[in-house]
Image (cartoon, rainbow, N blue to C red):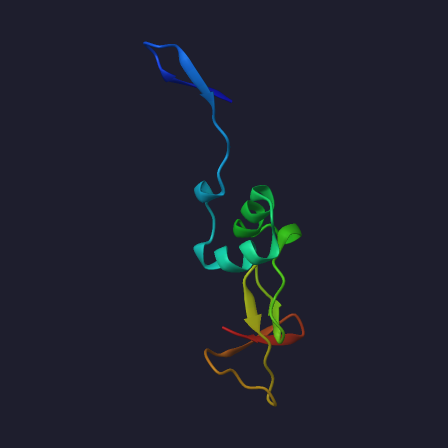
Length: 94
């Protein structure tokens, strides 16, 4: 995309996309940045695209319509924070 920088001089420059202008879930920024290298993949991840979900840490899984990671739980592994909530045959801490 060419953008005119100074109308009086006629100079222009080529605008380049920047990852700093991504929009999406701010809570996913760290996980998406760690899991992806391109701006397009980071954007898809932060916008909860399931095809661009970040890697969850050990003991956590993706749940709900989100790319967020939730701690898995059961009676033998209670939640350190939140409530153990049933999800697709298992449970996660919410």
